[in-house]
Image (cartoon, rainbow, N blue to C red):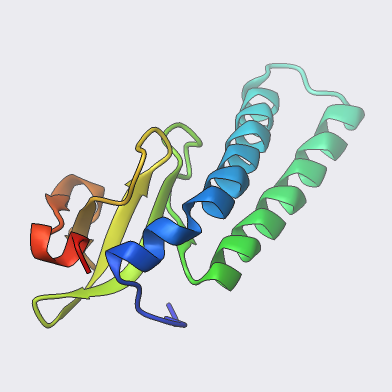
Length: 126
């Protein structure tokens, strides 16, 4: 993964209005796509719609990458987004979930969502 920039928590939070809109669109399309894929008897029109939705989701994920962050919820349930950052001299991901008001969590590159920790208060103020 090529990192375009490192975010401070404040910078990540400033992007949230745009990120929230993009993630909402990804979740809507992803859920529709999942419902079509899981259907027992698909028609040619439904297969065509799946491919259309897949393209739209890829485009929306590209928009997030333009901002400098990455979509991480392939089940289209939580709307997870990671923002590359540095905490205590270590490259990490600030981690935001679509039902959260602000970016207040982070995790190590390899730790993933289950390894989330609160961002140190001192970093939230900067």
